[in-house]
Length: 85
Image 1 (cartoon, rainbow, N blue to C red):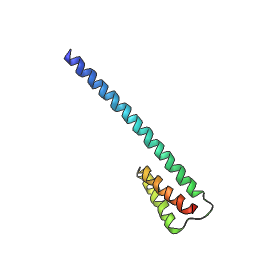
Image 2: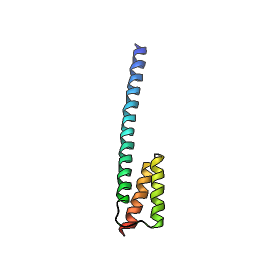
Image 3: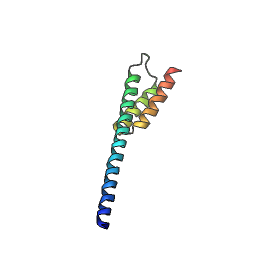
Image 4: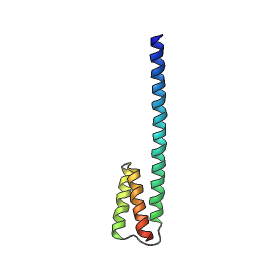
């Protein structure tokens, strides 16, 4: 009886870990898609970027390549804010 309980607890824990991992994967994919869209939007701007924003864009692309999507999004937001003002 006690052994069955441990087995069920273990299965529950494994199921929860798989579910949690699926949620994390979804979040990361969402961040990646958002970062790609922002970088694409910046590339399609009509006005050319100044040197500082070109450097930020290159850094955002590096962050994308390294899987640091939130950092890439933050840099893209800075570029968009700089170019809109």
